[in-house]
Length: 73
Image 1 (cartoon, rainbow, N blue to C red):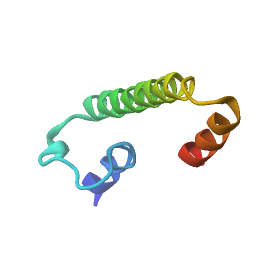
Image 2 (spheres, rainbow, N blue to C red):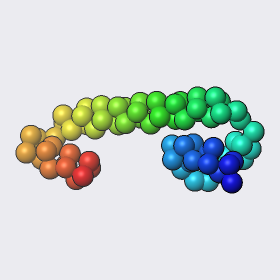
Image 3 (cartoon, rainbow, N blue to C red):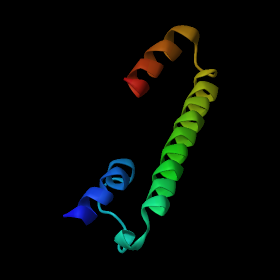
């Protein structure tokens, strides 16, 4: 049961299914992995926002706002 609890933060950051053998990592290594995953997600989000912004520049102004709302919710 403790192994599942140790991997909860990784599961939250990575999703399912988890790669095999993560339970062999130390708590410090798991913490580093969670931090690296969080940074990767943040960087991916920034890159996506920038790409959407660059793409929407080519659309007429009224249409770009509508497309942005559709894409980003």
